[in-house]
Length: 401
Image 1 (cartoon, rainbow, N blue to C red):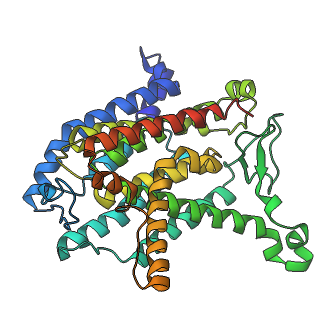
Image 2 (cartoon, rainbow, N blue to C red):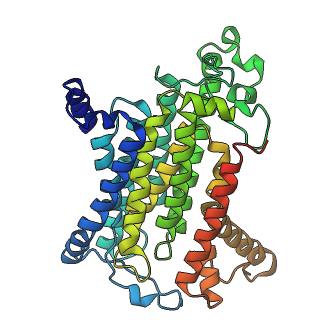
Image 3 (cartoon, rainbow, N blue to C red):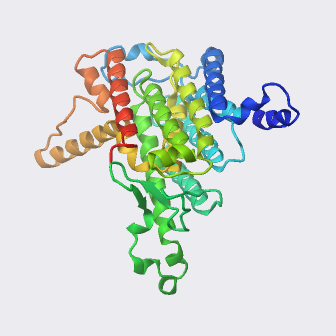
């Protein structure tokens, strides 16, 4: 909103108004405002959550220091979402389709998480919103994002030669570590399936359908991965900040014609505006750590974790870096894989041997290390370190091919 105001003031030659035309300045202001919102209003939110007795109900898993967290206010994701949305509204270009998609994603996934948290607290158990309803919400967001990216006229991309892609070719992403690293989704669909005279409407839209299904899978997987990771104080917030900063760099480079040409990467017109959202996202995560780092004064709850995961998924998709998610979001990936392996192996051994066995002392993986006697803060700091290494490795794909 302020962007439009200062554009008008700039036309009137108002001193300093021209600063708002620069993405770097608005991105810095978005990060600053995001930090101020979380730190300033975080304490008030915690007091409000305590007043309404919206505290976490802890199930005793035998973990050191676990029951001390009983009653800690949850649903702190409200302040994260507020600290993302408000600075973006103030400093972002609201006519930009990518900014619009990210704002919708934040609120959409936050609403699903809010309902889940509310039901958990109301019922005093850990069931909350049924899994199938969460999936419906995640699939709904995937459909919305996918249809928008397929149908909206402002969603375009240019190849390394500066030529705009055609209809199906615009559904393209980046393959890491490969020269001329552009992957077109129509390569996944045999040519005869794309023939309109044989398949009618379906033939015209087969590639679009595949692309939308991939988007649904990514959003569902990453949001659930972030949700599962949210088991230690500061783990998900810190990891998300690292991922968000990395995606901000990708967005800035991909949205700048000069840098994208120099690095020989895909140019995505209008993607530079995503940086304002990204810096607000990073500021919100870091600011939340003021109250969420060990020992936590507030938990983000599913309101925060589902929202952060959904935002990260959509960010990676719009900057055409979804194939880098397994690396960049490696912490989320290993956490969700540890749960899948644990449950699958337990069921397999119980069926074959009559007694279930476990691979880890407990899953997700961070609880395994807790069971081994590592302090919660040390586990979090080491996971952050791994997250930073993965982020550096991801950025290296810009040149390593």
